[in-house]
Every structure is written in structure tokens, then in C-alpha cells.
Picture 1: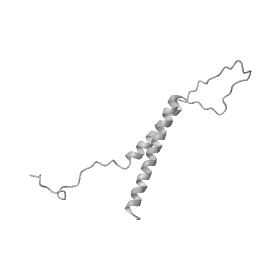
Picture 2 (picture 1 turned 30 degrees about the vertical axis):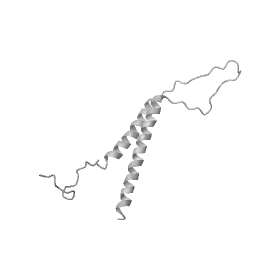
Picture 3 (picture 1 turned 90 degrees about the vertical axis):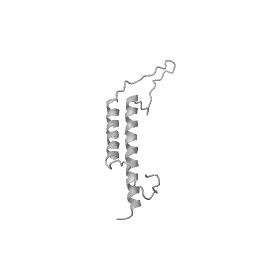
Picture 4 (picture 1 turned 180 degrees about the vertical axis):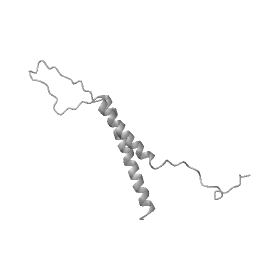
Length: 101
């Protein structure tokens, strides 16, 4: 009843395609939420060092300390930017493969 069908007789597989606007919207949402997370977790309580025998104050010039929440926000933002870069490269590659218009 259908066991002897050849591959040419079978219809095309019905693969679900992701709509074209979903991937860039996810990328933009990740970038914006990463910025928001990093902004809301920017609290820096500061630090100090005590060096009683050196007779010099300790200063950490050029050191930037960020909280773990800020690091997570920045990581989410970078992931969103990578997703957007992948999407742009994919779209440009598909346009180049389809030929000049």
C-alpha cells in the first residue's frame, strides 16, 4: 500500500521554517535585555587595600571592577550581537547564492 513508493513519488518534506523576522527580533531583544541587566546591576561598592608597612597609598589605576550582574548582562548582550551577526551573514550568503538580481 505505499511500501513500494519510490523517492521521486514522495512529496517534499514539510519542514517548518522560522519566519525571517524572528531571529533578528530575538537578537535585538537579547541586546536590549543585556543592556538593561548591565545597567540595573551597575552598583559598585568599592574596595580598599591596607598596606601598613609600605608607607604609600595603594591605588589601582586603570582597574575596572564590575559586578557579576553586569558581567551577565554584558554576556547576554554579546550573545545577541553574535546572533545578529550570524543572521546578517546568513542573509547575505543566501542573496549571493541566488545570483544577481
